[in-house]
Amino acid sequence: MKRRNFIKNATLSSAGLAIGSSLVGCADTSSKEKNSTAATVNNASTAKLPMVIATWHVIDATAKAMEVLQAGGNALDAVEQGCRIEEANEKGQSVGKGGLPDRDGNVTLDACIMDKHGNCGSVVYLQNITHAVSVARKVMEDTPHVMLAGEGAKQFAVSKGFEPEDLLTEASKKAWEKWKIEAQYKPIINIENHDTIGMLAIDKNGDISGACTTSGLAYKLGGRVGDSPIIGSGLFVDNEIGACVATGLGEEVVKTVGSFLVVELMRQGKSPQEACEEAISRIVKKPNSQFKDFQVGYIAVNKKGETGSYSIHQWFSMTKFQDGVNEQIQSDYFNKA
Ligand code: SD4
Image (cartoon, rainbow, N blue to C red; front, top):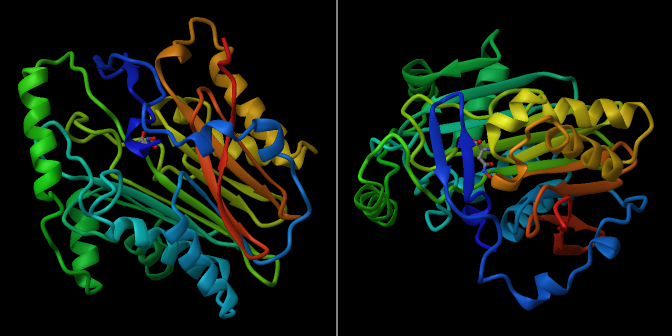
C-alpha cells in the first residue's frame, strides 16, 4: 500500500480536529502483499548480523543501511544513512523533501535518533531542511540537549552547514491546494494522512541504534508535533534489550509511550512480536478507544536480532534486510473483524 494511505481516519479530540473519514486499507496493495500471512511473516528467528528493519516498503533505504553495515559501519551511521534515502525521495510525500504540508502549506518535519549508549537527539517542527534525521544526530552529538524545536532547530542546522531549501514540491503543493478546496478549510476536515520512516539496525558488533523521521500528519494544525521525535514514544533503543519504532496516529502512541513500552515488555521476557502486540492492545483496549478510526503500527527487534511487527489494522508492513535478503514483510494486525 502507499504509506500515506496508512491512517485515513483519525479523531484528534484534544486538538478539536476530526481527521479523515474512511478506514485503513487501499486498493493498490499488490497481490503479493495480500498473500503474505501474518503467521509466516512474524515468526522470530535468531538473526544473522548485521541486520536492519524499517517501517513500510523502503527497500532502497534498508539497502543503503545494509551497505553501511557491510562496509563495517556502525548501526548509528546505518540508520541515519537509511533514513536519508527516504528524506531525499521527493516522491514519498511522508518524510523530508516533498512531505505533505500542514494546513497552512508549511512542511514541518519531526525526527529523532538514538544510539547504543542511550544518547539521543531530536528535532521538532523543523522547516526548510531536508535531512531532519541528520540534524537530530547533530543535536545529540554536538549539543548538551536532546531536543531542538522550530526556528532554533533550523538556525542550529544552518550553523552546522545544512542548506535551507523549499521542501514543498509542486506535487505536494497541488495536493494541499486540492485538499483546501475539498475541506473548505474548516476546523473539521477530511484528510489523507501519511507515514513515518522508522529504522532499527544491529551492526556486526551486536550494537543497536534507531532513527525515525516524518513530516507528520498531512494538513495538521500549525505547530502540531506527533510521536516521531519524542524519545520513548516514536522510538526507543536500549542496547541491552532491543529497540522499537512506531508509525501511525502519533497522539495515540504518545498517550501510551509506545516504543518504550515495547522495549520494557521485551525486558520482561516477551518476544518482539509479543511486545508489539501488547503495546497495540494497550491502545485498543482502552475504554472508549476509537481504534476503528485510526491506525498505529510498531516494529521491534531484540538483542538476538529477533523481530516483530504488529498494527491495529491490516496493510502495515516492515522491510527487513538480513542474511542477504531485503524484503517487505506484511504485518499481523488486531482488527480482523
Ligand atoms: C505522526 N506518527 O506525526 C506520525 C505520522 C505517521 O503513519 O507515522 N503516520 O503522528
